[in-house]
Length: 306
Image (cartoon, rainbow, N blue to C red; front, side, top):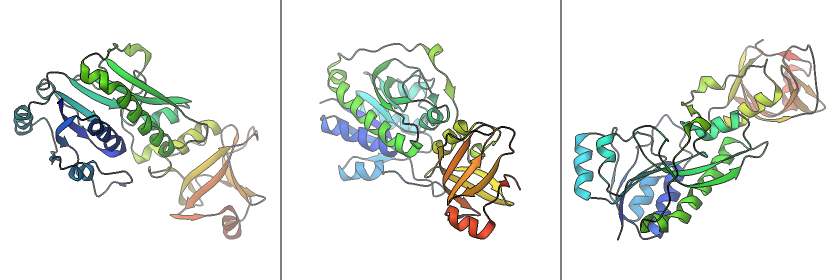
């Protein structure tokens, strides 16, 4: 029986671990993360899944310590699999499994290597992304590709919606290639890194809206960071405002200062070019309808930042 140590977290970790178990892989250990109490935990628990199947788990802050290395050496796994595990595995750790270490990444590599690839793809207006299973090296997301599965990004998809599709793509890609991988017959294709770029993580402050940009660009940001992510933010009437959902309209404006207004019971935002319909928003931490806003503050145009 083929054995593995699995490094996993999040929904992709749960679904891909389930695939390995369905194919009879002997998972000797699951390395995962302790949930951060300051993080919005909206996803499934890998640790709970492992415990359900009686698989031992560890949650080291750093998996590259000598203690963990010795523990994994003693297990003698054939493979490592990494499914949305958040720490990089260094050379000494990667050298342990004789049949290699593989990672599932949430993009169509070599595009969007690095952190939060789903969010970055939406910010850049991509119409397609997916999941890629590839061999791991010390450099992030640059090893040979074993399998890929594409999914569409529709014009109004949020990152949350796309992430669920990417999770299914990861499950499909792994399930399809796993028999060949276990048999030692799966092909591996070298990446041409010039065809994609590396992206870093994002912080809540990266969601501040620049209203000088086009309606389409702002719409992409809004849906890329919509809840359960921190959301796109601005200031109106001197109060913090979160824009939770938008739609691009066919309206065009020129020479207008970016502003928020209500018309016929709907809220709108004038952008650097174009107009967004603001479907959902919060003002000072309270979500309200366009009609409620108009009742309290009027329907006339109010410039952002004021």
